[in-house]
Amino acid sequence: MIKAVHISLILLVASCSAPNSKLGQVEDHIRDRSIPYQIWLPTPKAESGSYPLIMISHGSGGEYSNHTWLIQSLVENGFMVAGLNHPMNTTQDNTDEGVISVWERPRDITVLLEHLLNESRWASLIDEKRIGAAGFSSGGYTVLSLSGAIYDWKQMSDYCSGPERGRDCDLATDSSKVDFSKSSASYQDNRIKSVFAMAPAVGAAITKDSLNEIKIPVFIIASEDDELVSTKYGAIRYAENIPRSTLVLLPTGGHFIFLECNAITTVVDWFNSTLDLCGRNFSGDRSKIRDTVSAKAVGFFTEHL
Image 1: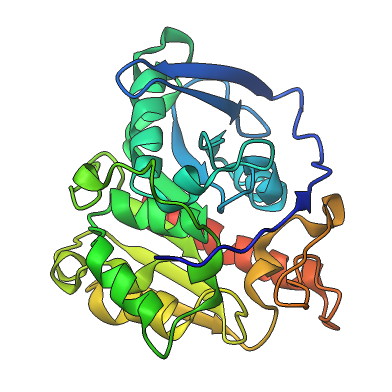
Image 2: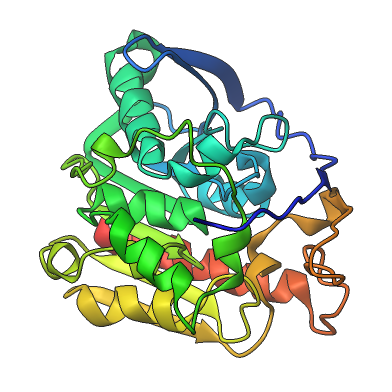
């Protein structure tokens, strides 16, 4: 069982509202989930035609607005973007059930994508042959799951009980409300043609066979000094087993270098130390690293969509 650790996060989220964006919410009546989302159209907007679409999946306990820097770069380079908040795993609504049940996240993406493709005001703007997904941490797992990665709870339990367990094993405590019956299903969505994963989580839980079978292009980027998610069992394990993957390891930056950190205030009590969400212990140039990451994302999706 994953050990209890209480983390208090206060996120002062920057507004993502813009003239070229719209807010919405889709209801998943089968799972009784309300999924809020935001759509951004490329700037400048084309006179006619459709756009490649990128779905954005945030990390555990975060929100899509944490990745405004990436969203802005994508829309400035001709991509339509859809960001969503995963129920029970956001800043305002984060539960142990939501943290552990990562396999519900790719289903959120699929539900939203289905909604957009059937909503007349959006469907005509989306090029269905050019849909990609980008995600951070648990969102990195989410987009990899959409490409075919399959979660195995026993593998995760064994990893978290072993000598090389990562600190991410301590993010949730109570699994009594978790329905594991669907945890090892495939949530691959063939409409997703390429994925960009930043510091992807739960790599130790993913079956090697499922990674070997992923057919689409995958770009994985992480920090070598990730203090939360093991790079060995995360980014490196994913990349070593996905045939068409590209791996980039940043020499420094930590796990949270991929967050819009100037919008975040954190209060964390964990093992009498601090998770460095805002890079207080990082002396490098956060904006320069984010510019590098966003350029790689734009280049990757331009080539593979």
